[in-house]
Length: 595
Image: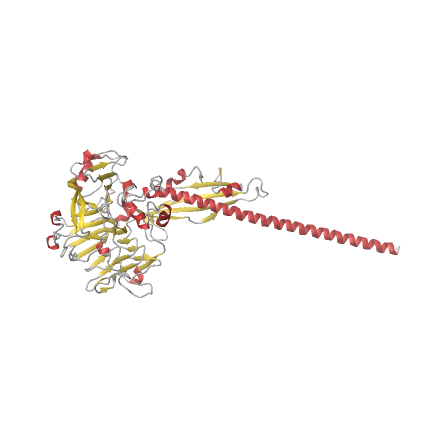
């Protein structure tokens, strides 16, 4: 009995041990399975999160594309409704944007919303000092595993972003440059607005004079302000011609408080990425300069401007909407055969309503001393043109929009052509948005521009803009007859005032030739000794000139420098930009959130 009892105890202990092992094994197996499930769930969640972020990025790209195609940001939810529900909560199952995600069977829902009550404001753009308009659009994405997944009922990733689009007048600064800004006037100059450059800045004045900067001065990160790459103080751009003695600019407060750095370049193309455009459409834009200059050009044809144009691709739609040709309510075409045609945007020929606007011969030979050759000149009487515009339109949706485009056919470096604007003192527009005049050739402004009736009922200045491959100021008494004569016969008859935003090009500095600096961005052909040139508005260099590309010459044979050049910023251009003028546009993906 004793042996049997002992044997039973051993058996019982063994069974208990086996049971304990089984329980432990089951626990370990359960723990392993739970750990595996957790690992798989986390991996699946990470994959779903990746899909959701990809979906957000795809919606963002399409949203930006619509705005760059001139669709107001507030209207984008309706435009994008085929790919996203309008509202706060996504309901409709949509195919994933990427084929890989579609093939994996991910369930995707999208929603996009805009509420005018809190998704729009007009004021200082967050993170900047610029005033403009900001529109927010909220996008929500829901991603679930496919129907056959073990986690189909217990895993959902819901994320979103509040996209932001900011739009500001291009005229935020007294002087601004795409590229390096150089300025070294040989007379006293005061700039009463902010200065900015998408590049380095080199500013000084000739010894004995003062260049005074009263507001902020901003240069691009990675560039320099009056320094070379080694940190040495320089007052001229390195590797450009050495001239007379220069002295540093005078800051109204102090250099330390007025000088700052742009963390990223100002986008002066309505959001277009110039470097990407060069890669995508080299037939239209061999260089980034060509992208910027597209604003003054008509749509492409196989001409001097677009010798490599691939007609099967057509114009780039995002560039097309930024062309001043596209934005113009009246187009004036100056043909090489001497005919001039006035048309509306829909192509309607309205030439008969504009008799007397063109003065004298078309493409008349005009000797430009700076270019050293004849320019085919066509003279436009702005007083007659403005009167015709007043009588040929009525208030309403089809009223004149204020933008005039003058297409000078076949203007090139070998055969430059241009327009001369006369009697332009009164260019008050029909709708309170002023007047813009753009040409793909050169523009010569004779006498005062936008100086009478220049103030609107709210006290702001009548907004105006002139834009061309180059812009030359001529005194009121200028005579074409003396254009080819020595400087002694080309004496400015009086001071001149130009109240406008100016966008134009220059010729770049080289090791042997100076650019002329910002003080000569507006060109001169007369002896302005004792006279004053005042620009009340904004002065911007967008590109390098291509039709008028003869290098700058120092005062003497071509022109005599004015006694004073005044650059006064018209702050009203910020809130009241001229009709159809370019904008600086920025986009942000906004804050990421989980809902």
